Image 1 (cartoon, rainbow, N blue to C red):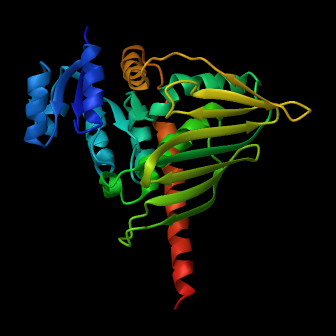
Image 2 (image 1 turned 135 degrees about the vertical axis):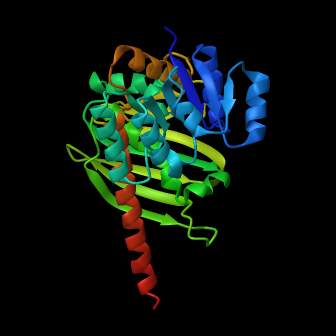
Image 3 (image 1 turned 90 degrees about the vertical axis):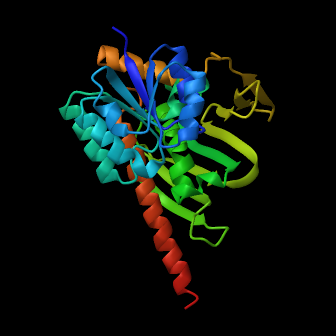
Length: 323
């Protein structure tokens, strides 16, 4: 029997989801509050359209719901869908508070439903290749991770803090390749360059079990996009540069005489979002737990909330110095 999926939110990212879901033959309904977006959907795909979320959760033919709406709506929409007995995939972050994220994860477990979070990079073939290299000991003992994720994105300011927009990618990716959940935030600082209290540049220092430190740099104000992960090991250093079209994943090693060797690593060229959508369908049909399940979504939100609290504390302390 066909696994019918409803997409809630078909904006700039939702259109990518719609394209993949339709190509997989599972997109049955698109829900959006914008009539112009629904008009685009009607002209592009042969699916049902609606402006009412209630139409989605009350439709017995819909098995799964994908939520790609602004992050402050994720918790309420996901909760209603789970209560209606629907399997749910929520774009990152799972919620805007760790207690809400915890509640959703618990609710999905009680109702025996799939709850998956859109941590896209854990489905990226290059990231999975890097994870395998780490688990096989190719890099040796992991000593440090650094993720630099920057772009020029004024529209995303509705999220009120750049870390809620970008850092879920970094945190979930680091956790996945290490096979470890973050132990906690060491330091967090951020700046509002528009003087509107919206933090658009941030630095996070995270500690992983085994005393493995990691640094994250996020920015909405860089015109030159950067998506760079560096993993330093005792044997080799891996560099994943997702901006490149070729040689995205490279391993660096240093000989005794100081010679630097660079080896390019090959991996599948499949689209990560397609693989993510396929995984959601597979989990619905098989009952298998998602790679990016509610627990991982909760862990990411918990770290983000801790980081945001530290930023506010640092901001108040800095202000007090001038009073």
